[in-house]
Each structure stands twice: as structure tokens, then as C-alpha cells.
Image (cartoon, rainbow, N blue to C red; front, side, top):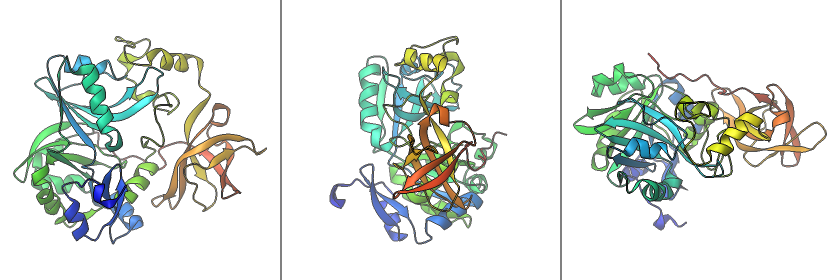
Length: 374
């Protein structure tokens, strides 16, 4: 895709002003890093507060008395009983139990739900929602109207509370309409780094002013996609299209925790979502492969696509995400491996440029998550 045909977020000019190195991502021209560099940006987010432009993500509002019930038919998640002012992680599934996308769903009250979907999937997600929900509720894309900023790190609450004191009392996954510096925002205490922090939906025309206001705080630095990826990898979080896709079920992706108890085979509203019987059968009978964490036993980074082999050299899996973990000071990876090799501390090898690199199956997250639960 040529640079001319890439879309721009409302912060594009600011990224250029800040000296960002821009790359194509999900159809957008996005900052992969700033002059600080990926390593320092990553560590700054762990130690202070990082500001990320995630406006390429898709924001969608569902409105109507039947919105929750209608959406629940598309996801293995309890939407009907989602409290007002809370959000929940969800997945769109297909009839084979595969994951079409993962998303966040918040209950705004007044029969309104607020969704954030992945950038690369947002057009197909919108079509999916309209095809299945269009006659039951209003499906309103906010792609052009609103930007999305993520303020992540231990100092995020201190910084944002200077502008909006009420956010200090929010806990992990709470969601609220908040006025910040004169802008009507939606704020969730959540993020994609494993750190405490907030995601802030702001009107597009107010996004640059808010970003500048936050960047003026001494704890805040602008952070690019490079550090966003290394942070989420250390936190053991999936990236759609890499660690899960339409060929991967939630059970294989080690996302059973994300299937609400009410929607499981023995739950109050069991099934009723696409692929439910496939997923329930896997839960009951087992699976052939699953997503696991890998810790390389030497300094060589293990990247996506690398084959994973056993002691005899037989291929038993493939790396889906990998790189260097600056907080750990060591490489980390995630892979899909045969179930027999998925046991914690199993010794395996990744093939990197024809050379075998010893890896050990590890629990995730690799770095302790620090969400604020009150």
C-alpha cells in the first residue's frame, strides 16, 4: 500500500512533529517509534506513563432495548447482565468456533453499548453486526467521529486525575463518560500493556489538544507501536491475526477464561453463540494444540513463524508472536504447540535461521500484570 493511500488518525501531524518513524499498519500511517526508541519507550511505560495513539481501532455504538440480547447471540460472553459502567472482553466467533475478532464491550446505560474492535477487522465487524443486529438495534460506527488514546503505566492515574479527578476512584474495567479539559470523553480503566492505565475515547477534533495536554505532563512520553507490541507480549496478551484467527478457537487460544460462566455448557444461558457446540466439545474432549508461552534459554530472539521442534527434531508447533522483552531483559515468545508438549517447563527448541534455540514452556504473563482492582 502506497503512503498516499494510507489513512491518517487525527494525531498524524503531531506524530510527525514529534519525530516519529511512521509505518503502514492496518491501512493507517502509524508511529512505530519516536526518537526515544522502542526499548526506552517500553521501559518508560512500565515506570511512568506512556501515551499511545490507538485511533485506528474501530469504535461502534449499539443503541436499542434489544442491543444486549442481540449482541450476546454473537459472542460467548455475558452481555445481558453486564453492569452499567463496566466493560468486558469479548470475541466474535464463527460456526466452526473460530475467532473472527476480539473486542471490548461497555455498557453505557440507556440501552447503549460501546464497542472497540481491531483496526484491521473493523469494516468486516461492522458488516457482521449490521447483518445480524441491524433489525434489532441501531449500529452506529464512530470511526471518523472519535479518536482513541491510551495512557498506560503506574503514573497514568496521577496524570489523568489532574485533568479529571473522578478517574482516581475507577477500578479495572470500569467505564464512564468523563469531561476532560472540556472534551466529552468515554474513559475505561483498561489497556493492552499489562499496566494500570486508561483508554480515552475523545471527539476527533479534540484529540490533538488532549494529546498535547497529556504530553505536557512530566511523567508522560509518546509511545509507538513497537513498544506497544513488546508490552503486550510480556503481558501474554493476544494480537488478532497472529495469536488467534478464524481458524483458532478460544479453547486452543487459551482464552477459556473469557467465556462467561453463564454462557458455558452448564451455564444459565448456555450456548446460543456461533460455534458453541464445537467449543463445548473441545472443552469436554480436549484439543490437539494450544497457545503457550515460551522462554528462549539464550539471547536469540524467536520470531513469529519459527518452527518449534521436540528433542528428535519433529515439528510440534509454530511461534505466533515473539521478540525481546525489555522488562525481563530476555527474549519471550508465544506459540501453538501439540497438546502433549504444552506442559509447563517442557523443553523444546525453536528453529531460527536453521539453528535450534532451546526454549522452555512458560506460564503467562511473563511480567506480572498490574491492573488496579481497588
